[in-house]
Length: 436
Image: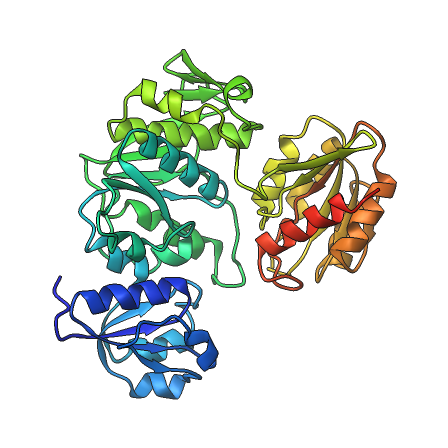
């Protein structure tokens, strides 16, 4: 794909937008960048790029370009993108743009939950095998930055959100990983079906020579690639785990409790998916095993902060939807005082009530949805609504007996009170360490 002399428009000037602009410049394009934000947001944009802050839909309707690159944070279903797209020859995202200039292997990873842990695991295994394996895409480095490295890696571990998959055209993963699916982002998608269709695009350019790694029982439509399944429920699956050991065709490969800091069935699924993906790319089994020794999961994913007065404090701030909350609850072996809440995303939390009855002593809710969530959860366990995360920590401490776990697993996003799940998790960590 030649961009020499073409006009490339970047819509959205975050890190992925800046990376896309730099790559387009490298390929000889004339580049402009547009964003509804003010000029301060354009800091770090490459010098030759024509910057257009405070851009409106009217600006978009009057604009013409050969290629429009839309940042994943901007709603592609909305009228803002539609205004710019009307005068564009083609509309893609940064991941799609980068894939057109990458000559190595791609392991693409999607799912409602577990993407980041799986992406890290794949990257660790690929790096250990001498294949580079930089984590990129929705997590880590923008893919376009990886492509522009002086010596791009032989393979990448590419996390793909539904937002990024909306704007692919030719992206072709050698291995596509489907972890799971549950309703999420209903503040962006018109229906659950639309959300699932966006994610399913990870398979659309694969052929019979590629591999699709899929959780058994996912109920997906047929795919062209060779399917490899993993499961924590069916021992007959090619990859199976009981939550402690991982078996490949009946042979024990790894003991998670002895070899890693990964715990719980959800992390067993993430690990199996990563192992299956790397094996499909030709990584030897001995190298895979060696790579996982000593691995600890990323922060904010059932991260043990401390044990105080016999109570464990776990930070699962990355749980931004119901499925992640359910996974965290299901993996607990001690009685739980759950801290949940945050932004209203239009999700239905009724399905978690049976699990709350089994796993939880009480719940403490906070943030924008504190009151309605507490009213719902009170159908299962005693529940209290508070305003802030600081209030929630103090309230939960008073409710948690020795031998229990206080679990921050919000079940929704953080943007009502925080800049992201990381800030929310870091705040929780600080609050817990301040307890005496």
